[in-house]
Length: 68
Image (tube, rainbow, N blue to C red; front, side, top):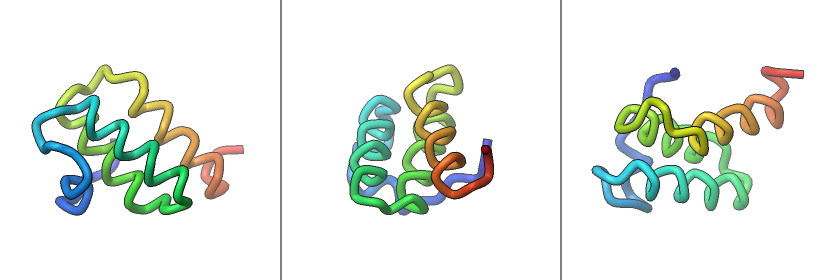
């Protein structure tokens, strides 16, 4: 898991991992990979087994060429 920042908390309640993951999806759809990554990491800090957040990070890694 990568370090998360406070910037991800602007779109979703900070204590709700599902809302953080949804914010990540919206940011990813807007092509803002860095903000989406922060949101997904915030979700994973709250709920380490949240599959939606892990999948979102994987999509970012694929988009940015970190994973082929």
